Length: 73
Length: 194
Image (cartoon, rainbow over all chains, first blue to last red; front, side, top):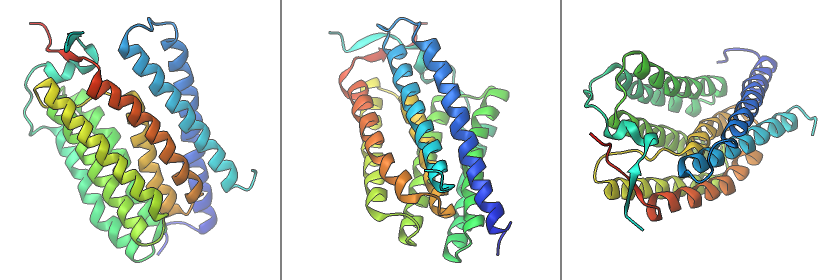
């Protein structure tokens, strides 16, 4: 019992993960650039920077996984 | 060094006004549990696409509850805590299900759950140090929780499962070490000034 064909589902997964990972990467890159201008002695600012770096890493992992899934890597 | 530092704006909601637990945002959060029985049904019958869509719905409801809380102005410390607990229960349960049916590798799933329990224990200790129900705000953990939701989707969709699962574990270890220091060793924020 399927909602769509297998090919459509593969593209759905590709787009769902690829678009989100790409947007995530850009979003956290912008956040990190903003946070890098804030006062680094504030622990909240340091937490934010760490979180945004983690976001960047997750975005890269997401994109690499999509490229592997599509057979590019 | 003092045990209690200055009031921390990041935890503002933990010390702000009282909001009823019976509010629209918490209702949306609770509704996420209704996605789990059909999710198990879909996995049991091998309906990968349905299982993927159901876990996607669970994730979308997670985003929706924050939006509803803003619209109805019903953000609360309990709501944040309930949201975190719901994340842990829904995603933890779904991970166990996909691992039990062989859709995800058992070892990283076991490690993810172990790390999740460790995180919960550290958060409970942090709440004890604060002296009230509160949810430690971690920007990194917010991101890894979203990744956890996707982990289940990778398993149901059969998408680079080993790649995504094994890379998740070291990333979560790094975050736990970072947050553990903040929650257990660093001074806790003081109550909001009147």
